[in-house]
Image 1 (cartoon, rainbow over the protein chains, first blue to last red):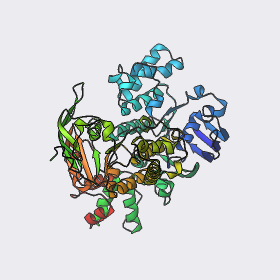
Image 2: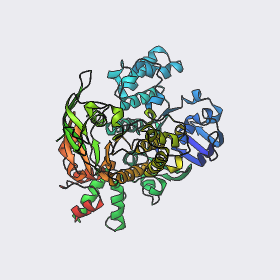
Image 3: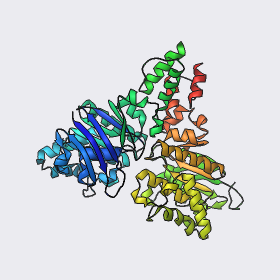
Image 4: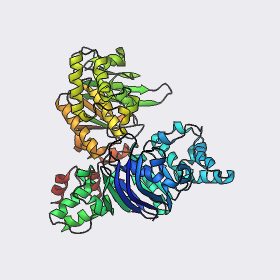
Length: 281
Length: 272
């Protein structure tokens, strides 16, 4: 297991109620695990706990344990954890250093902090900028990029440090549809390359299509954990503040009317194929 | 139809062209009329001219040629500040807007700034937070809230100005499902109260489910304008604008159905 969370209860400083309540979770190596739930359910806090920002940066009161790549996060510094876990935030503006003049230098920042040799640094920067489609823009100022480009830059900066685990905390929520598609294309490629990914996401069409595992949170608790079919098929999904993809709602309607018994399609293409089949009968 | 007589109700854009000082032409002859109580979603990819268009509605930008009138008043003769009584504008990023240390003060700032009496300000604050469904946040500090809630506060602070026209730039960004539904109810309430609501959005489900009219923009021009059903029945126009139709409309296209699918009933009807 790459990430093992055991009975984690965490309260931010000055808050009465815990943000996470008795969370236990195991995420295997190479898994693409999506965190879903309403705002305030605990998705971001869980992301921060895996990257070590909880409790190291935010302080507060933490019970239970988070073990990432075999090490207990409480025992290690954020700097040390950065080699194991990379995190991409909701707003790329929170991530971009503001201390660099070019896209190239921005990606170099993390590597320089890790003391990576010069040639290796150059090689890795070119590699990750090509992967996220920003190599042509390497001499631009990070501040001149569009929101979607900035988010790809944030991902590149994290990828450059080559952590085995990558956490994306609602990395698409501020982006337009084209920007969202670009980020998910990168996520899918990282998944195929064997990275362990933890992705907090509101856009359920992408969750259904790409996740290998889905964790549903509500009020700081894990309500469900399983395959996208199991979790997105739950009756209490809307009560947990999550909207099922509309095509899944239609398929559920057909199942309830006895018109379709097969497994729930997870993509629009599969749903279209099933519906054509149903229409023929 | 315009002419500054002060009698024309509605916002009228007549052949508006706008060129930024750097030479980029963002609007190329846009003509739109929006009447009282209309709910209008403005969609299109980044760079299509949506925000430039929106900034013309409250006089932040003035047309290079053509004209914009609000209730018959030509925006060229007015400052954005004087138009603020007519047109409320909520920016995409709430942090461009919020500056008070309590939600109640934030929401009260707009109406107070318009010079309204204290009891009217109080009533408007209460009304606005009820419309946006954030009454429970009144005593909070805006920066103790998450981005999505701050956005609702920014919206309430503009709603409280009680303007006949309200422009929302990307209201659903970062909202979860309950937040998006709140905004949908807000649009309906404002519309039925006779206010004109215009929202720039990338969220096609939101546009299709909560707005009576959708305007599709591409390269500085309006390329489609009509009800959700009319607009989403034109896949080629949408493709030109790089606008992806709502999920069920795409499902219908994948199934090769001729008609536009917007809800379950549409689909069941077309299957039978």
